[in-house]
Image 1 (cartoon, rainbow, N blue to C red):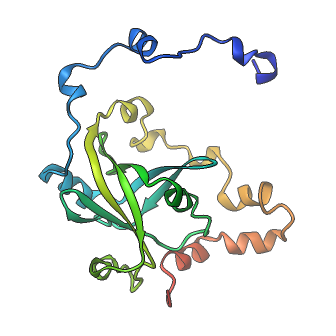
Image 2 (cartoon, rainbow, N blue to C red; image 1 turned 180 degrees about the horizontal axis):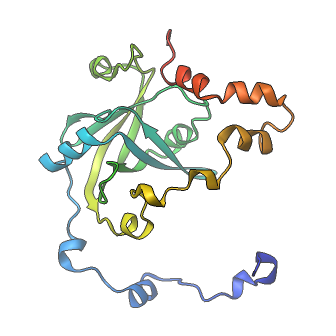
Image 3 (cartoon, one colour; image 1 turned 90 degrees about the horizontal axis):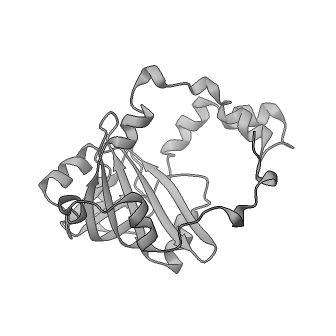
Length: 218
């Protein structure tokens, strides 16, 4: 097996211009090229109402970050056709993407509906707000978010299902969760190697994680 130590990465054939990239991949047809829209339409609202998961990409002074955000389907609040809001829930408090937004407000999101191959992509600019009337509509299990990411939409479009078709990601017969170690084992092997194993197991137990999803008192 070839390793990076066997490679001179600088000598690999490399694309260095948009013209070279188009010559290799080809140009999209007009319908695909022009499908981005400046605002949400009815079908986009329906997709957001059904989506329980999105991935948020940001960029800061030290690089980029992609973070998953999830809640019950419809967790994204549509303020109007050019503005959406995503609640923040209890997590590990790294909030890398939020730190990035303080440096660069540009944000890119991909929304998914499990089992559906196509996705909804939203690009825009975001701000972090600590209260708004719509926070009351974001309460889950009595938990009102401490903040929300409000995104002003620049463009929105659907991405085709080919990636999910190739990967088989939504086909249960392809799932192999046992091919990787449980999360508690991963933590013990990587970032909590010096902690007592029983403490790590208790911290990452399904019961403890369930309690931490929507902690009371926030």
